[in-house]
Image (cartoon, rainbow, N blue to C red; front, side, top):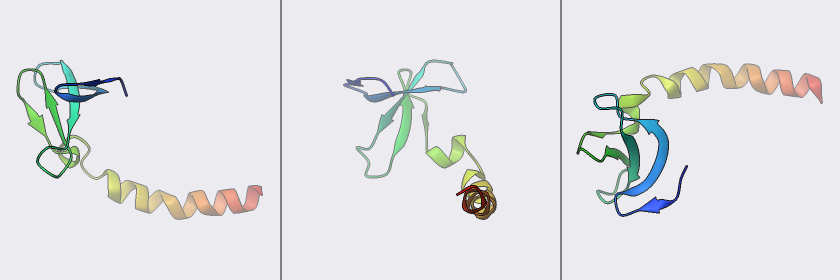
Length: 69
């Protein structure tokens, strides 16, 4: 992530609608990603299903690491 700005902290993500930088903003209490043109997204809108994917992969990862150590 990049340095802070008045919009929030710049991320490495681009707005799906206009391809400008998305800024991390927590003014509303919950994290939100906003671009300079005003498009806003909740993290779960940009990454649907990521929590479920991680939960299904984590047990396999733990097993692999346990075998490796």
